[in-house]
Length: 360
Image (cartoon, rainbow, N blue to C red; front, top):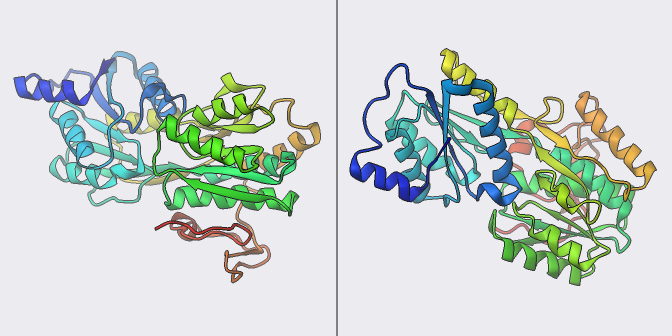
């Protein structure tokens, strides 16, 4: 395994070490671009576990490289380009904000396969997109939160106001309110994916405001540590299990399982069968997993949460099933109606019952 950083890549290009053609019998090289550090024990850590699964699956036939803590924007485009010039045959870019950079480089290198996580831009035939139905997992933990909150205040640390994050807030709230009509969600937008200090500050502010449940759509374990110190607050692991914070405050988790997808797509690229696609998988496919529910959750709540999970896995239940109104009270889904993927993919509104506004 070879670690690629921006500085090393730049130095390699400057000295000509990253150039040159890849011999036919060289390993198939797969690059991964990460928005955070691989040690975040959250989003980036789970993607890196997927990279390791690729290495395990293909052995010496594959070489993987990665760049961590790459900012979204111009820096990402430079790093992606450097990976290609260094010999990468396939690249996974693993954050929403890498979409434009991924497509810009893909247009320059049509023989390289690109896969962009959580995005929608596929401007060239060699670009695919993929994501997970995280909202399915948030429905389950929202159900648990609604049962377990005693203050009836659930704090939610949100990263950026994009559909992926808004869907998660809505799914969690709907399932909390279904079992607890008095529940209130307080959302703090931090405008970062990974900033432990800022995430900890947001968690503390929510706890000070009365929240006894903290949810997050950010990548570090800082909110878990803050809740642990506060006591009498429960949390849920985000992206990874964050089991080191069990049995308290972490009572369960949403786990992103990228390994099978990465192995499948790398295998297709090596076989020459890779084709452009837009993949959106969830619990039925095993891309979204609910971590162990600890005994801190009452037995009957564990049972009802498991029933929701099993219903989703079996395709018998959809978290966005009407009747559901928009925040302003206008009808969105009629009784029994299920949300279509197009609306979910572009979701830019809160459902009825959530207070506050979504930032621009």
